[in-house]
Image (cartoon, rainbow, N blue to C red; front, side, top):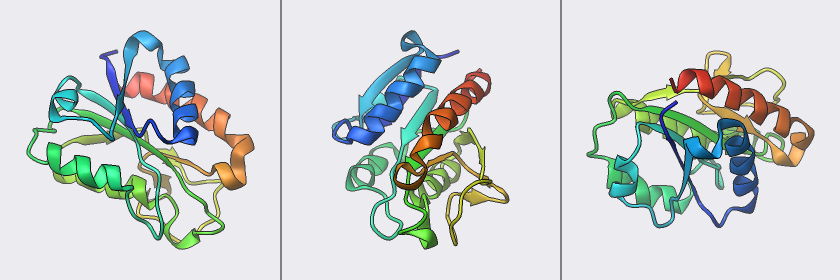
Length: 168
């Protein structure tokens, strides 16, 4: 497996915990963590495989740090690169935009020629709508720490195994 760049905000404690679980399964030698708060286009250019951790903020928005980083890579060629996206949401408090951040990021990647991998089933979730939904699957890994924390570790484990195959 080619080295994977895992881009996320190091300030996000919950996301950092999830990233550590992913790295445990993918292997430390296969992963490099990049703080998206200070990431540069040079950091981005080092990888062909990516994991983007994208929580959903407010009423279905990307966090500010992603809004600031995406223009940096907008002109970079994404064709031939693979992107797995995961993020947290709250399906009870925000059922009308559950994990929209994943969908917004997938749209960016696809519009710029990248390939989104790591689709997961939407079965077992209860929400009204989500920009991350493609048919009966999410275009990434949806996590709801607030309402389904007992399912998180298993979901991460299964997703990591799936990514090992899809990143080859």
